Image (cartoon, rainbow, N blue to C red; front, side, top):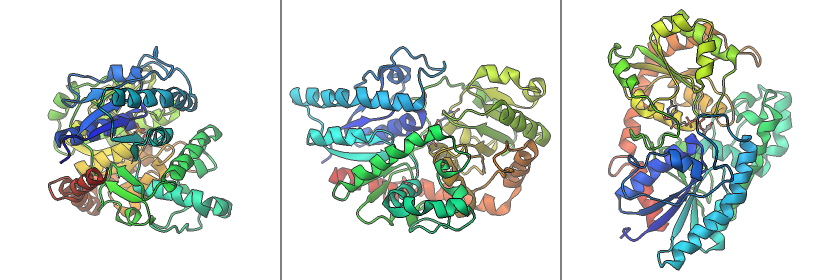
Length: 444
Ligand code: UDX
């Protein structure tokens, strides 16, 4: 029934969007859907075609930054890049659609990731149905929905009294520090450019009849948020956590698995802050001191090699742990030596940790990560958030306290196993995520 379907999947070229998009493509290909994957030339070049899902077609386009070398500093600011990607991407995606139609192989659906709401308008202009693949949590999308539908006008009262409980339908009681980071006094003004983009996403969804939203999540994990918005049809299809290398934009290091094999069960502290967050040297030194203080073996991903050599106690650190510039995270998280994950609470990493049953020390940096940290600690109860004094750097002893706590806490151990089991059930035949994927295809 679905064999003839032809979907164009357009992804913004960030690791946190490319990884889940390629995994989604993989799931669709496996059930006979034809998928064409489209993103920028420069990122497409770094995707290892040998290991991409068999049968995946590619339609890259120029975002105006084709010379950019992965691993070097970005060619421009994130804000400028998102804008350039839109300016170049909209006509390019239109051309991909019209060329396919001219060849007699038209796309019948367009799936687009977070950050590129314009793709829905391109699809609409060509009479193709479109679906948002929101690469953050349902709860965060629900929060933006409320924010742009009235809560924006009320927020100053909460900003003046940051401990006042914020009660929004479908969400647990929140305080200001649990909202996406943009609303915190410490949030840099230059981050605010993302808010109009999220508003655009909400507006595009509201302009459709019963819009469907694919999510890297599962019904059981976000049950209250998923059923909340009338007229929005959330379709969680995750966890998208296949062990793969095809989603990697940066270099991966399989030496790690051999190193992990030498460590006792649940002994290693895994530390990683995703593909965008940049730690200050003070933050790095405090994490280093927390790891040394704890004395446990650790695997720490620091993307910029120059920063590693600047760490004050680098020799001691190298004796205790392994510092790498990148790893195959899903593989690492499923290794029995991993005891906990100190992380930034990026949505993919959060889902990957939940699905692997790894306790979390939540150290959110920005955007949706603050809200994810709240869910980790208070709703799913699979970890703790680091406490900081005001806006200051989190001290090493606090990181050590949290690591010790999550690695020894019985309630957290029980909960991580419960969520791991539910995650695995969701993607089995007849599980909630498998049924949601089928529902998407039946109606796409
Ligand atoms: C971005 C935003 O920062 C985040 O807040 C949002 O929720 C999603 O988009 P990013 O910071 O990259 O994402 O974090 P995350 O969502 O965790 O995605 C990172 C991806 O890179 C994960 O799939 C993770 O498995 C992968 N990764 C990370 C690796 O494969 N190896 C690593 O060493 C580190």
